[in-house]
Length: 128
Image 1 (cartoon, one colour):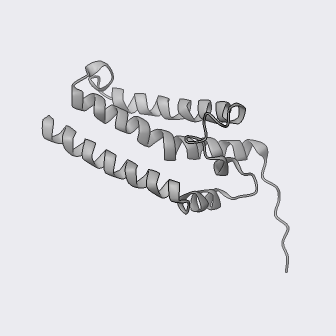
Image 2: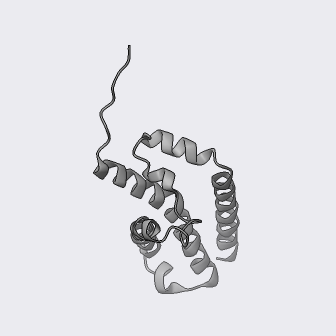
Image 3: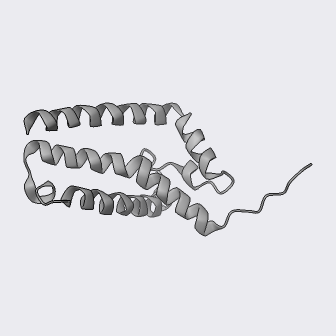
């Protein structure tokens, strides 16, 4: 029995792409930035209670919005930071993640992020 699936709305597809860029690319980047700020003793962002969390919570969605908008206009400049697979309307949310994870560059990016965050976390805990 063949089932016809309803097409995904463009708003839902844009939201999925935005969420994936924010969580999988923006969040680790800004979490690493906060750890580096903590490590060097900069109190502008990480000194206030909850300041680091607020910074990451604001910066990751801003990054996703800017990246999504600018990468469509300037694809050559943003080829390393924008994943067009995240905005493919023919894929489900889970399929977007699965296909992204199976790419060699994504595996390298995930491995690099995990190692970098681990080293920074250990350094921050050791210093303070």
